[in-house]
Image (tube, rainbow, N blue to C red; front, side, top):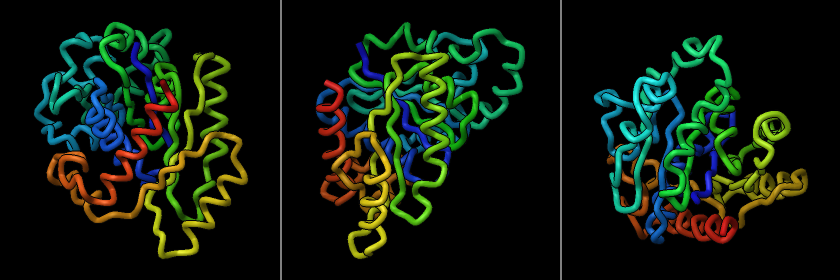
Length: 254
């Protein structure tokens, strides 16, 4: 049965989508079957995998509204061992369209339950907000992975995110846990990055992954080529770090 990990942080620009794309690709490169679910209306994980998001007939938007089945929505084997449930800007309307719908927090879970046994890992890229879409992701997930940027305001909003995770655990998904925190945009040349890492570690009781994701120009370039980092430049520092994180995540969830 697939281990479902939601990658969430309501703070934007922390490397959430970068982590969703590259962690899922690196887990797949290690022989695991992976389903990527893009539940962010920006659809950047979808386009980061080289998919023309605005030309898709079926996306997670149609799935959530009940206009298509999960089978119809999944784009299978877009790269070896990687399938994706794509998204585009239409998804932004879902919050309004679901007003009055019963058990709307469970819509994604009920659909994913049909297919989760086919995959070793399911990675969900959440929107940068604590919205109904994020709650759907957390209700579906076994665990939440939190990317944190190595900068001064790193801890801002983290307590609110942990509070939301605990609320979902208490009311909607008793098995939900925090998988851990991963540091992104780490710059070894600055004292600030090292200070942020130590500061967060001292404030958090949750697991902190040992792998630090560096600031890396190749990581920034890869999405414009529609490829994850391990296929764009396997020898780059960004690729090596996500491969290392994939090893940690597989060990942590085995």
